[in-house]
Image 1 (tube, rainbow, N blue to C red):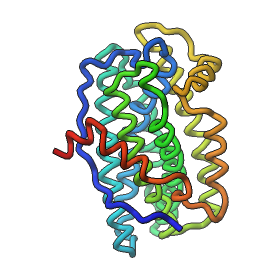
Image 2 (image 1 turned 60 degrees about the horizontal axis):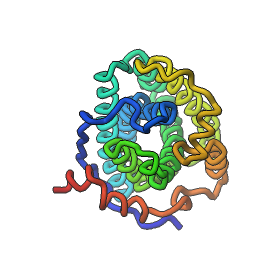
Image 3 (image 1 turned 90 degrees about the vertical axis):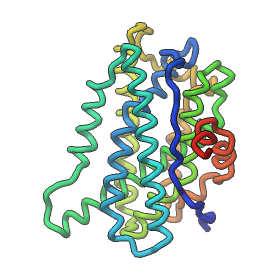
Length: 284
């Protein structure tokens, strides 16, 4: 059975990027830029989540789920702005992300955006996008659990960036069931859920790999090419997620009986949010 839902609410966090170095994982430009992809991809993606969920709100017939969706929307909106601040910091350091972000914007606003369709077809397009968001949210929860446990401090990672990633990861774990439950409430067809995962998984991998290469190639400090062996080495140190683990997570999503509450518990996320400098400051 799904675990009892928390009352989801956005935390109005802020971060001071002024002292964050360009390679905020010392000596690990590739690990730095793999995680920097979040700042380029997520703001547009999470604004898209907010837009699509806003379109779904009038169709929700369950008051508890509606409250959770509203909380999800608020959290995702804050996530987008927090990562936008990190992206702006990259630009201030001489790595202007605008050319790549323009491509990400086209993906979400045009390819996956609203379309002028007859009402029944438009509703199916809404359901398709909700299923896509549920698939993407599966990966964000997996990555959220990973970053809560990753030994980033041991590698000397900048504490401000670590707090951003862990605060965000904790909220992804906290609301990991909402997108899945919304899709199940409005449609729930297993075939659509599997099909959208078959699209979302490879596209996300391609998008983040392409973004990493772009960041490495345009880094003003010229760290060199993005090499797969460097990614494997960083993963062995716990500084990047393991690709095999991500593939296993994809497989876990596919059974008809799957529910996100089966993947871990919320306790770890809540424990970090109670200690996060940004979340604690926002609560004052």
